[in-house]
Image (cartoon, rainbow, N blue to C red; front, top):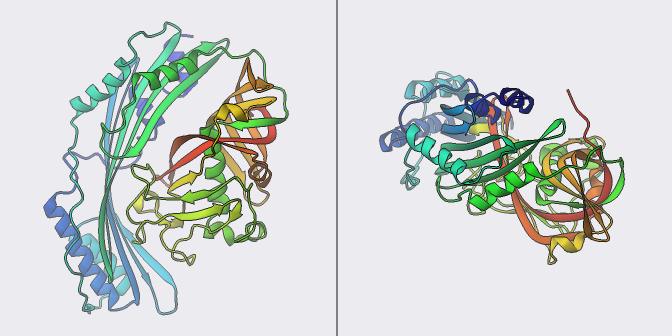
Length: 483
């Protein structure tokens, strides 16, 4: 195969298509210029306060949320360079009537007229306004300098140039920088908050042929902060190259139940899927979940403690307040194996985990930055006769049965705690979520961070997971191809 055929096999066709493959496409409008100026900030706050005062005269509970989200992504590969800029503005007005019914109105016209029309859709033509005292506006979030296309190109090109000696067996190489700058306002009759969340992802991809299949190695940094705060250094990029070049054992791994060590990315897939499917107030309303998840009862091995903490500095899924205006605070979900709490939005009786995809989608209780506590032993001590699963590829779970399937890029065989040298590509762990979590018999001290960005109805959800190596037991098989 030549390189264009390889790109087709990998699902990409050059830097422009690469931006789409990384989720940088969509119907959002192109934007020129910087984000919200000081004048725009004051205008948006004035319009939102006026809408809240109008709605508070009719409804006992009111909240206004507005966001300006600007995304800039640059990618470079063997076929060229691509730069994409998109922007989404949105306002969500939420009210609760005297009968306890929640209603909301969403508009993407973040002008005075657009916000007035949205408020009128909820409150009718009444011109009454509640007498509210909002106080002084919060301090402006730190400004972020926008990078022009040349600066973006130079930065993404510099990532690729860190690997000074490119191995001739690498048939495809790419680098990407993705910056999402979200400016969020949250106003109610009792609070006035503002935050700026600059989410940065940097990723390199390397691919090499092994027999009839390409093997891909990737490395990524994802965080909230400045674009230069967490660099992808040469050692990290060399690791992605080494992964792509590592010889794979011919044939497929035999299906079977084995002793397992999950690397941090696979542990993150397990924790992420389990939390979203079982440890939220929305999940708890399902009868089959409520039977298994009871506060104060055991839901995992005693070695496991899980906290959702959006206040973690630099966490990709972190925030200062949620999309219902509640300040960020850690929530312990599992404490020593026992279920301590579930994540809940306001409708679910909780506070602090009502999140909206893209800050404008439908509100849902969801994790932000999950932290699974590490142990006190090195990960090598967890090995026995079994396999190490590496390179988590996400998980699928059926909440009605607790059956979970976790994809992994590699299974590395071990005997008597030593590596045998056999490495099998494309495997998956299949089993019962409760059995996998309850069967954890070892937790390593080394912790890795995995970030996720997926979309719901075209709007992004951001979250991140800190997880250590885990030792458990389960069925591993060659990965099934799905249409």
